[in-house]
Length: 178
Image (cartoon, rainbow, N blue to C red):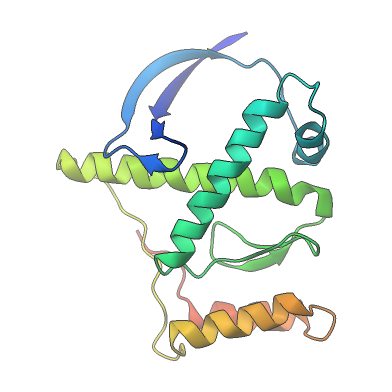
């Protein structure tokens, strides 16, 4: 069944270069398949699956987007073996099912890309919209120290209590503001 949607088209040249502004338009979309997060790893390794190649491209781009965000100062992380990831609110969480992490990661990176692209589009058009910001609290240590601590926890989550560490991390970052 076709559904009305608003599309955010973001051409990605040579797999890594984002164009300056997205194309945003109304459209109708027919979904070829609904997937749950847990299905993604199996599809990625099954070359015969019709969605394998598109999902492999999505994963490659998602990894580039993640690396760029991290290099740009985002306090974000992922531990593939433990199913630990920074969620959309900036909290470090362990996903309930480890097989969900690949799909969660792809969707999260593309949603962040879409949100940032729409924000750039609206800012360029001087459109009056609300922007979401998340800032460090006054008690937060320097960014490098936070990243070192997060990496230590992820290296050996059995030694560190993830829930306690996540609570400490949440104290360092204020909730998103609009």
